[in-house]
Length: 372
Image 1 (cartoon, rainbow, N blue to C red):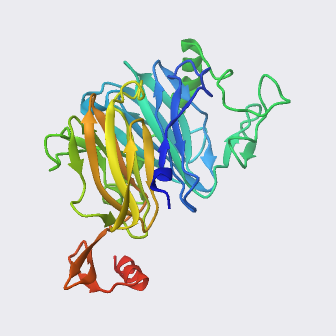
Image 2: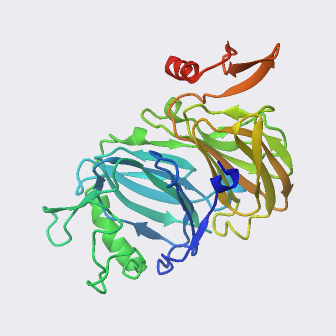
Image 3: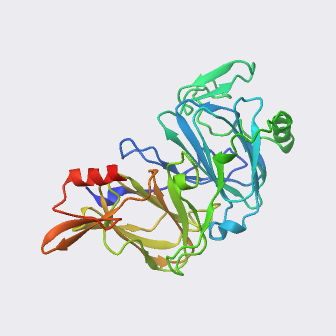
């Protein structure tokens, strides 16, 4: 394993430069090197009132959203309004207003969208991803709302509106709307909105977590702890804004067992995450705690730590501007980790609950995972 291959710089894409309501280039990362892991990351920032997408459902995936303001170092001072539509049918969805940093989980089979960015100020940042086995979706036919269209792959199924001989690339050339067009589209949805509040538990504000990481990391930080905050939610993450050099994480190398770990680094200004990045970070990664390689991070990107791989402390060597660090876990249990010690010359695995196993085997690790 070459540890340096685990660092993936964010891609600066102008693919959606025609989306006039959003910043460009956009920051994107799609994980394609860890089998069975569906993870994507990046900022999508709306800088003027607009709406995103039409009512639809996904046939085999949850759709998740994180909404924040643009200034991640002032996360809880953001001033924005976003309405998201959720419901049992496309013509009678409920509408929920979000005014604080929040996480939204839309279970597979639930109708959702549009997302209406009502009040954006300097910008509203959206992080979104699919979690499941399919990106296919179903939506009402524009010509006959009682007829439904199924797209097996939302990224390649439809032809270009302006040139039917080409596939749609979601470039946005046909997605731009005047204020009057936006209001004309969303007004009927408000008029027909259901009032049951059936899906209110699909939305939770990000926790203000007053951590114990020291004064190098701004407190409170925004955090989401998975199922303890929302039933059915699997992923866990936190926004750590680092203001000065420090070391983060455990003193000894750790492994997250069978769980993958993603370490996200970017600038703290979501409107311009590249120019707001001014830092150097060092992360040690290896196949054992005795053989760790150093990765130097000097640009925005993600370190993808596969299951069973060991990681040392995260050393933030230099900070010129506030750094956004998001550790991201894909599993729905309390973080599982182990360290290695040597007692009387014998290797010992030490688990979260302080249990130890001498001369550990892969089966021992599997047993501890099942126990949890």
